[in-house]
Image (cartoon, rainbow, N blue to C red; front, side, top):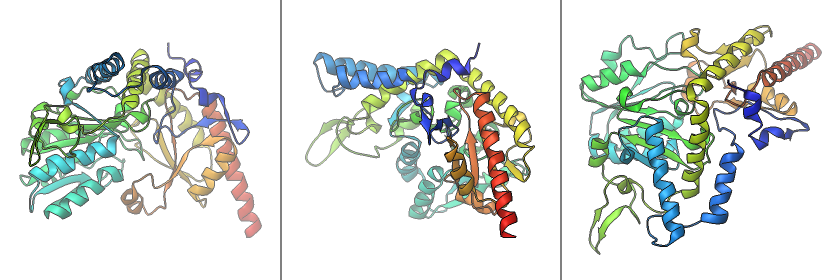
Length: 414
């Protein structure tokens, strides 16, 4: 049985206070909190097992290497990937996307080729492709949103054409929480010979993922959103595609032989992992995956949806609330963006902070989305496995305080 209260007890920071109030953390879409099991794994590595990997024949190095490489296998199994060699360690989703853009993209995108994105992309899945398109004189095309905050696929055949080389879109929105129909996009892209990259920064930590069945060519996500440490991320790619990609960065560990004039490169996955990696981050991520496996991503998603239902039922009673989310429950996640009439998101966030509530306010690295809806930004509450209905009650009560405070202020000003 899913027990959010019991889960919450595993997270030391959630037992603390913020501004002398019990901490209510509702910003997991930005970064999740870490259970003590992950924190202890990091501490144990640095205190008892610290050594570089792949290079040493001594015990500590061999042990660190074993843990590092077993994590690669664990991730491959957890997400039903093609094979462990198809798992590339990076610093996060941003680096994973840049790796594909700069390695595969530079080798395969040429003048007048088309790169398809969406208007709702996080800047991490927008700026790298803008840079590549400018360098290669390629063309950017965009999938728009419909009235339900879903990808508008009504003219997909006109957007993804024979000139399309790659489609790079989010699996799940960090603003609206929309779970997108990416399968239709993948099918159409493959019909014209294009590759597909999914930004899985939100999806990988909340949704059960089967990468082989999804048939996506590239998939990127970050450890820090799924209970793991910061500075560690994953790029999954189909092995046959990764094999053709030239190294993006040169240095140690990605080579086979080195001469003064030229070098040859190591086999996958080392070819795309130059230098000393974030070993502690990988070991911490391994423990985070163990934690998520024990509970199950399906159970976590169900819990988040129950919290969302509970929140929407209460928040609609507050006057002047505008929410930005799909009307279809099956297309939602545990992310709720909203605004309060006449109150800037920063003011809402400031008042909630005084009540010990951590939410995100602003454009959420999605400025084109905000411009499209002519808003300065939104307030965003995002839920995860450790949130409870008590957290929601405190959140809703504090939103009522915001409403009453600014209503009173408006009356004084008038």
